[in-house]
Structure formats: C-alpha cells, structure tokens
Image (cartoon, rainbow, N blue to C red; front, side, top):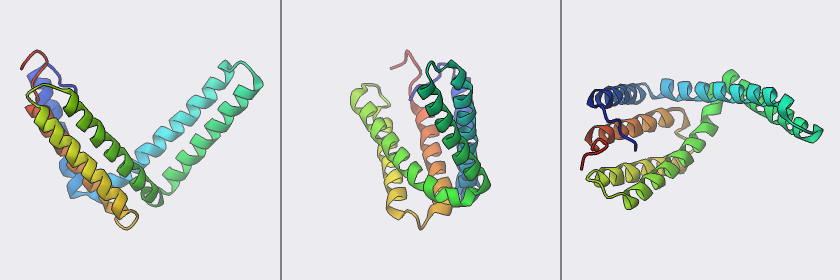
Length: 171
C-alpha cells in the first residue's frame, strides 16, 4: 500500500476509510447496492468510451469490434442499473474473486517488503484473502448483504494499515 508522506493526509484518508467501513458494515445491503450501481455506471462509461474510439479505428473489422464491445458494455451497464439487486448476486462472486486476488497480492507485497509494517501488510493480505474465500464459498446464499459487510471490513483493515505504516523515508 502506498502511504502519503503528509501526516494530515494520512489521517484524513484513514478517517474517510473508517467512515466508509462503518457505513458499509452497518448498512450492508445499501453498500452492496451502491457498489453494484457504481459498477453499472462504470460499464456505461466504458461503452460510451468504446463508441468514441470507433472513429480512431483504422479498418472496418476494428470498428465492428469496438461497436460490439460498446454495445456489450452499455447493455450490461443498463441491465445492472435496471436490476441492481439481481446484479448483486453475480457481483458477489466477482468481488469474492477480487478480494481473494487482492489478498494474495498483499501477501506477495509482505513477502517482498522489508519495512516495519510488513507484519500488518501480511495480516491485511490474510484477512482480505479469507474474506474473498468466504464470499466465494457462501455464494449465492449471502449475496444481498455479504458484499457490503465484507467490503466494510476490508476498508477498515486498509485504514489501520494506512495509519500504522511508516511514511516514505521513515524506517
């Protein structure tokens, strides 16, 4: 995890992470729904981006693939926005794999790092990987609340890691 050099910026970021974590844990269904809607919005933006890139494509085949890609992104994004609760079930599985991958990457960072916060990065990686594994194992039965709750726990651990990690140039 990259740590800002400014102590005020570190504390501000950590406080925001703790606030988001608390809201996600207390209101997991709302958090999961908002995450789903956000992903739908990003998919629509990606679809529009693909359509804007059509003019830059050199040949007809490239243009066709860009249009098809744009339609897929737009269709998926519109579906997610139209049916966010149904989309949470698929998103839960995706987030489970995402958290498991992030946990493995944190473990790799802990193995490669030599700083004093190495142990915390290791704990962050273990917890994040376990949370991802829990989402995958319990899917789809806990899809409507688990994503928000586990996301909040992950945010809380990231905030603790941010506060306790040494600033650049320290340690």
